[in-house]
Image 1 (cartoon, one colour):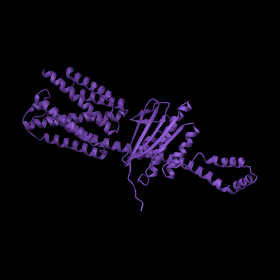
Image 2 (tube, rainbow, N blue to C red):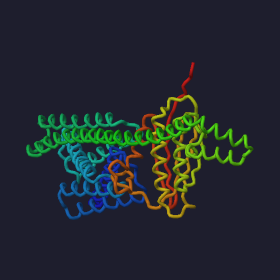
Image 3 (cartoon, helix red, strand yellow):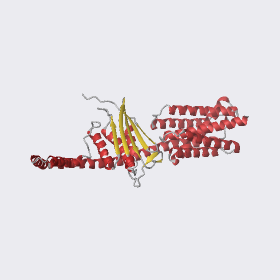
Length: 432
């Protein structure tokens, strides 16, 4: 009966460690939580590891290594996180749990003058085990209830825990109540220093990744601005030419109308309008730049036989900057048009743009048909283009712009429709 209870306790503890490890990986790497069926699969693997450890009597090192590898595999398979960084987090998470298990057991032993707390097969040992997991669940609930916890706040919290552990193990070596082998204390002292360094290394690595991504986004944004500038300059050139030749056109029209050649005059006017029909005068938002962007994408859709549907309800006088809105709309519509164009059947190509305001929230939804399923790598969607040097950053650029307004970007897809939804919080601006 006692052995069965210990086995059950080990299985439960292993499942909690695995679930918490996955949660912290998804939270630190900003990946979405997996579906329920995959959580069950992760729990099944953790159960197997715990059973093997209990029955075969393998070392604690085996358990730490096996669970860390399993956590990294689950994170990579379920949400496409990078296996290398997931394994890094998994290993140090497992070491940190074992470290704090030792500290809690040892200090309980010192407090109650009993070495039984260090023996996890005893009642006192199990008390120390589940005291730790109660604290871990408290940390989990704290993180869960603070979805907007910033990276700096998380780094500060983890750093405090790492330094506290280092101080606790140093202090533990000075007490004389509980006899602990010097080799054991030395091992945990070294690991406590390694844990502190791992926190610092991870934070520096994430900062480097953010800076590298920002550099790439700036490069990609420069390309987008250059492309749109070329298009706009071309449109202005057409208009300038029309104005330059205006007196000639007036003369021709006057001659045709004087000769009562009405049909020919109308045909001549239509020919004059043809160069600028690509960019209509339709007003969607009231902002000329954003309206130009939406209308220019409509021209692209018409050129490639893509059905382009627009529904816009746009607030006036807000703190939303046109550059950020253009970055969001431009990237989403470019991705949508690119995907729709790949469908061989023209009647199945479509792009739908919907913009709605809900209280102080602006919702931008872009839907499109697609031919091939999106490719995910490292937790994010990747371009299917072969020349992807500056491609594949569209959604990241849009997400970066959305985050300036406490917004989020979410994607989903069915068998025939891909959908991207961006929500932005805005404030009204009064004009004196």
